[in-house]
Image (cartoon, rainbow, N blue to C red; front, side, top):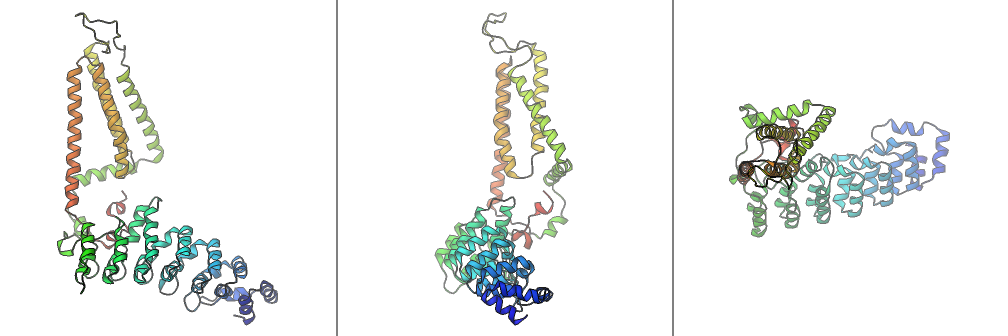
Length: 444
């Protein structure tokens, strides 16, 4: 690079820059063709010349992503030299520079965490939220770096940040960040256990998304590592146990994913797979139209329970026996039994169809049940009130509701018992680190 250009960048002289461009219009192009070089933007960043750096960013945006021969970008240099204002200037022009990998895969965000620049770190997170998941060549995330460098405040910020994310894949991103393993299979929790950093362990255990029982390459959990230390801390060991951590030998042995895929498909999984394929086979337009029809059917059938054909006896009506039958249907009982049966079938079928068209996910199921169960009970009560055989139909309805509730409670109880056994996920590095799940891979 021309020494005069270096001098202009060091003193921040834009006039000298354009004088050189006037003399040689290709002076910046000559620099840009070199794959690894210290550009004028590197020099300006190191010296903190914000105005010159911004001018260079407008003239040659590609310089911002170019690494010098030491594997550092202009943003890396600005952070290394403590040029806060210039760092923020580069960040505002191109937030993605935060994730630019330099020497050993280190990003500017990694540098901030290692140096302990708490305020700048939070600005980087706001500008580019996904920088928190980037790893270097050793597979180390910002969490690993914070633990290894005793940056506890930074570690609290990182954990607090991923817990507050609300985008569509926020839960998956939280799992990825908190449970990512380095090249040795160690999560941030493993590193904290190896280095006996009690404060870091407590911070990490504050998040439920942290997997307490991931094995590293040596087949050890965080609790195994703590118990193998020369000076054991019984208090922190007990803290890990209470939060769900255990030693490797006491955990159920997980199956390889290949073993699961080779086994015959269970009937339950077959049904769920069929339902998922059916749901995905329907286009969004068709689903919307069908949901409108379903809503109309539910409304119409529910209205029939409130206002049956012919109406109901009023307060001045009497049966031949002379006993009042206020609120009972006027129509013939045989016809009403037919109407009640087919109307109930339509109501139940519409509810089932609405459930089928729901997006996949347990949270949608619970929301649907929260709405439909009270509506269903209300429908049964309304039908019971207008029915001539109120006691019989009400008894049947209540019995049916109790039966469904009992079955559902049994299912929940069995699921709870199953979860207490700590049945592990399939043995897959991607699944253990939260990078994916078996359901996501299958497209559920």
